[in-house]
Image 1 (cartoon, one colour):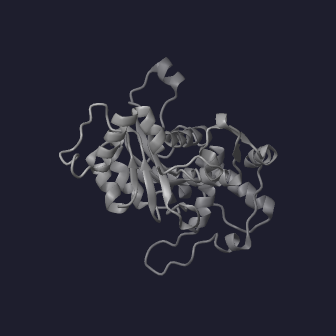
Image 2: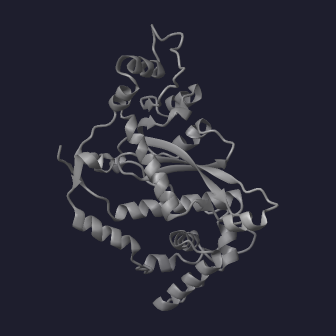
Image 3: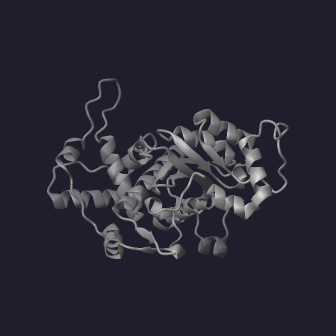
Amino acid sequence: MPFKANADRRHRIPKQRYRVTNWAEYDAALRQRGSLTVWFSEEAVAAWRAEPRTTRGGQPSFSALAIATALTLRAVFRLALRQTEGLIGSVIALLGLDLPVPDHSTLSRRAETLEVPRPASGPSGEPVHLLVDSTGLRLHGPGEWLTEKHGTTRRRSWRKLHLATDADTGRIVASALTDKDADDGSQVGPLLEQVDGAVASFTADGAFDRDDVYAAVAACHPDADVIVPPRSSAVPSGTGATAPTRRDRHLRAIAERGRLGWQKASGYGWRALVESDISRFKRVIGDGLRLRTDGRQETEVAIAADVLNRMLDLGRPEYVRVA
């Protein structure tokens, strides 16, 4: 069984069986998430301007750090690009720094190719337990009132966000943005490629009950457990009696214990935590994409994931078992 309900994995423990021991610290951490303290370190000031370009072409004025800083503040405060330009300018003026301010068009253009560092996965390089799910993010378009009042000649659309979170830390370790018609199973490979280090288990819902999902996990991490509930109409493979696959073992456990018993024994119930991360994404960042092109939207999602991880690092509740 890949998961154990203990205090070491406190963020994944049901609240009805545990009580919080650090309410004062956790309450202070929640207030700290809303505090605004901005400063520029000497390293950041030195790295604000782009290094001289040695090849032919225009010379960029701002480094990737400057663009990422501006887009991070934009994601936190849900600002438009022009308002982001004004916020950066006011902060630099208040700090008395002699630094240029990236304008809104520069932020939009540089977001197309900005490389956001991958989030770290697993404390001290330990194997991670991945929880995977997807959700829809609407594209920028007319609001509900405008659509209902006047109609729209443009069909509103949306894109699909795929997230993989670390069950031990709650951090988002991989993300992918696809068209709305992309199926969930096809993104297993791209998500696993973003994870640095070993994977102990891969947990997802019934939409991932496919042979190519098991194959993708086995190709990247042969020792990882795949915890995906088989469909109600699933049947064992041809080698189920002599050489059972992981899916065959799931079917056997369901036949012996029932589906609820299998979920408890396998740890499938912890998959609900990735749904909580999706809810946190939409409550903090929003349920839509504000940039227009695919590359800029991917940067927008990567910046948002980094923001949520930083907020999570500020503090989380600690639980102890009481029953």
